[in-house]
Length: 163
Image 1 (cartoon, helix red, strand yellow):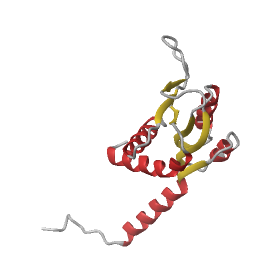
Image 2 (image 1 turned 180 degrees about the vertical axis):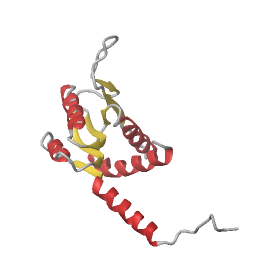
Image 3 (image 1 turned 135 degrees about the horizontal axis):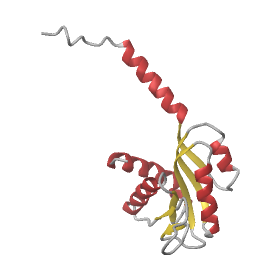
Image 4 (image 1 turned 90 degrees about the horizontal axis):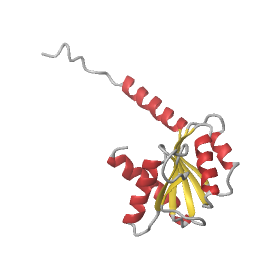
């Protein structure tokens, strides 16, 4: 993520989840990490503390062995985030681990729904809270198609002939 993208995504998700009154945000590493960090920073700038947590993909074989790292505790209300949803498997794994750690899932936010394999529907079947997709693949394809049409309708200069 670049700084502008992080700021925009953080603000967009913060505006979506602000009414949900949560104390944590996170998801399965690595896709959720920059998104959760961006939201954490935007919330802090608005005077709200939302702690980031990370759900491991697998347990370490040394040190303190925990599925979830971060400043969240049993009973905390949290948001699970993910970058892209295809089948919903990564998001569901994060939800399951959050529940095993007694976190209360207050919402799920994904950046992009690929609109394949019923990913969003699979997630909705696992939770009793809002599940929000900020963008879907179709929107990006529509925009790319529009841009391509616009570019092809304009005559392009022939720089080889310019003197």
